[in-house]
Length: 421
Image 1 (cartoon, helix red, strand yellow):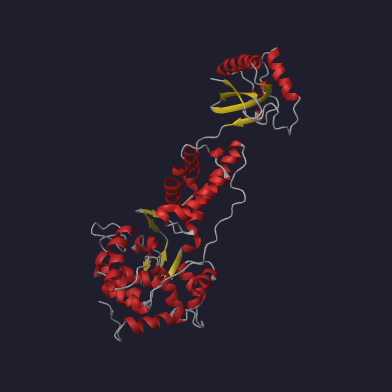
Image 2: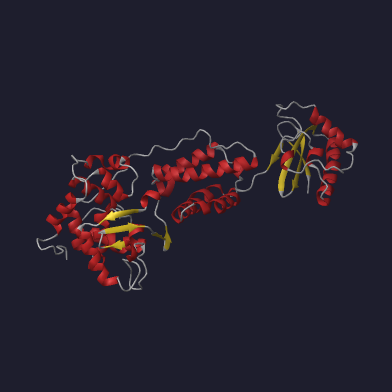
């Protein structure tokens, strides 16, 4: 139902009504008097009748509104405006376009943040990989929706955005803030939502001028070759092949748990990375460059041959559990990875350090940066030198033979048998 309200700042009246499912507020220059209220009430009543009958013309009532084009054009057979209607329109015509108190300064109330963010997600998720869908959903559910619950997307201010960023950095989880990289991910989702809402509902996004936090250079904590040996000697034998392949190929965990026998070619000594497994669902690799071919070292080939004898005829996946289904990343980390580090007396590291370890061992062995980048799935060597610069010696070899020699000397006996049992 339409209502007549007054602005506190100017003491002028505006009409508050709903049209085509959108709440609209049209400001007039009429002062807040009893006579003017009654005049606008008559107009509002007639507007409601026309809206119900489908004959309402937004531009006829509010000719200077910037939002008139968003709704229907003038109704050709609409009745002639009454004297009261023309009086209101006349007030509008006398106002300057840059006068903030002009008639028909239209405000379309934006939806709640939770409602619009759900709509935005449903419209965008088809563009994203499963891993990104999970990440964005997690950001919305854990950080943005709780923060802006009950707030309309068009009412969020720059101060609130900066306050959220400070909260994430300083106050989150009892004073233990998130990393700059994680905060930037969260804020980037908010930036996209506000930008899209601003385009749709005609307000200026409050995110202007807010720059991403500076992200420190990635700090890696790779294993030394002796630490790798100690880990493999300590880990349960059932998982030794899994972690041998992880340490000496640089393969991502999602790629390794999703590895199928059809992508292992012993004749060519190659592993093709064509699929990943994200939360139990098959997916494509992280990016185009991540689809690659990894050269097997002798140690990796022997580990895969041993694994083939265990699961080759039972599951399409190279590494699987008792039910022949792929391994679960979280269970693997919590039940195998971290307990093994503790038993071996090694400092706590994330499982992703197996990938960093492969890169640093290749560099230490003197492999070509271009070859290493291809093994890692990097399109250039830039990231290699940025992240692992302190591990780069004089590089001379080009084909993986240096790493092969190093592995043979430390992991294989002269007869070629596996030294780690």
